[in-house]
Image 1: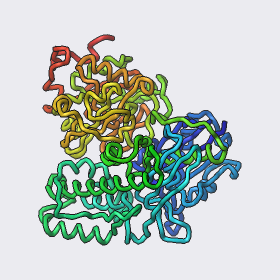
Image 2 (image 1 turned 135 degrees about the vertical axis):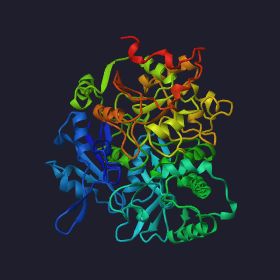
Image 3 (image 1 turned 120 degrees about the vertical axis):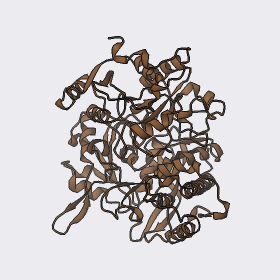
Image 4 (image 1 turned 30 degrees about the vertical axis):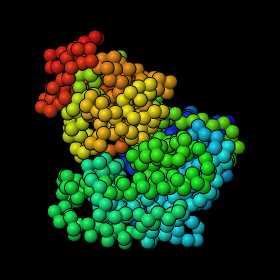
Length: 601
């Protein structure tokens, strides 16, 4: 019955506690310190030595939620890629009395941590495991870095069956770095640190999801050739060759393209580059999945690593690959390694036999009425907001009338996807909803798509998909005959990144979508993360209220409270509520129907 604390010390620092084989709490540091990706770098001393700190806000959060003190922990396991420095930092900085409780994974550790996150959280008793990311651990005494790895899980044992590396001089690159190279060239970067911080001196963090979202706007260019060389388990490309490709393409077709200009993504050159990069990644990932099958012969596949956040590639592996079953954990990137290291500690250090399948990513703490009332009572909101208790059915009614509603319910999700606990919700039917959200609420590029949350029992009626996708990591086609009905969540290529919602794992969210279906006949809603551009997803009631008060969201459902603005300001002309659609029951909701505050209580 041990308590094991797992720490991720990479970007997206995080902490998790596992008790008796179950993840009882997990959170990313960025949700608490409000710094996107939360690297934790600080400058120390007269010589400006840069070091990295532990995610102590996340550690305290996890201990308080679990109801234990730091010395009640039975073990602590930490991980960081490249230097494998997790144990040194933990021993130095974690205020735990018994330092013998601090452990490390076998070196190199990073891909093992990813593998533990995926396999120990999966429903499989045996499985192939594929780990693909930007950078793993450096092999001791060399400049070689983990590139991608195939492992196998059998019972509680995880072992590597094939791996390749790349050199620190970038004469060969990982798939994550390949994708990031072009993402930075397209200027899809969240700025952080010094101007030359980050890979390829991009000045921040490459936002690969933007490249993935732009790709369907491009067109195939067979004349550009193939940029990756597939060689058995290995895949080759160098930074020098990519620089040459970029210069050649710019000279031939990019004379009028300037990445730093606002709206540069409109240029056909940018769209075609994104299309090519995405196509190359999909080709490589299908190849690696086939290699993993040949090495293991397993019917099951677990996948982890930052590249697994590319849900389009995931979908192709699931639909076209050789495996019967595929599992990807919600926090497939580095933040999830806090869970993986904790699970490794439970199963390997303590010989724990009990496993629990990850069916929900809601590992955060639950906030109660007192927390909400305390946040609402702060002077900052005095006279600006009003709140009352409300039923879920009222939120469904607001959505059906094309209002935009923030939604905070239960514990927050672990990972980069909002899954109905810290979400902004809207009507998927309205053709103007996507553009309105991008322009007025999320303040992001207009090409960016939005995802649907769909009742699990209805998914096959609306999408070319069967089974579960609870973590929004798969992108099937919207059925052709349905696309016009749900235009706000249908991407330009007819796809959508779906989340299936089940009553047993998320009863309140399921109740909301069911109520929306009764009103409209549509068993899904538009779901995006509860944050503004460039900021982390909200965690606390206070975070939610602050973001709600300064954005164009119309209402906020906060743990059973319906919050509105006392002076919401003039509704923009392009607000979807101004051009209502017919309701599924034949009624039409427009300006004269009345506001939520004037009905009921």
